[in-house]
Length: 264
Image (tube, rainbow, N blue to C red):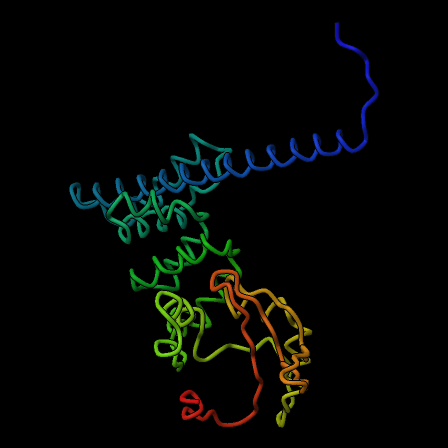
């Protein structure tokens, strides 16, 4: 017979915390599964529209008629508007291979895919942004920001000597995390800004700064003290990168960049 023992505060708190974590994990998995099925359904509808337009010679008017008839049959279902059906058609046309939908496009929300259809025409770039969205958990607004700042073009283009100074594959990863140029439009800087003002603004806008730096950066501190042979130096900004497993020092300079310094 079970005993009616008093509940231990610590044990119950741990038990409750574990249950909450499991419930949240299940909710996330369920939401992802629903999203995959919805995106796949939209792809299938778009593919059927493309196929019937090609085989039956139906024009653009069929989209409007479909939207009206489907809305009558499914009045409580959102996403069956004429505009969304046009997106489904464009989606199926952009991804003729079902496996790409299942493995990539189906892993992000539908309206993320609509943003990519509108703003990214190159298939390679579109797939890259999908992968980055999955890896970083970007919201739709963040995805738009990254596309408009041309992140794909800037990623990995910084001038470095990593291939000479670091072993592979660390040199390749280090190169990939840098951009050229960085986009600091979120800062409000004076025309003749100095390094200290730039540093203070970056620290104040650390969330936006970390977003621009990319995945894996963890902020350690500004004006971080470092003692070498009895002499104290101050590092403008110090970060730790979780993938590289190393510290990254950012030395802020307002002026021309000297490429010869890389050889030092």
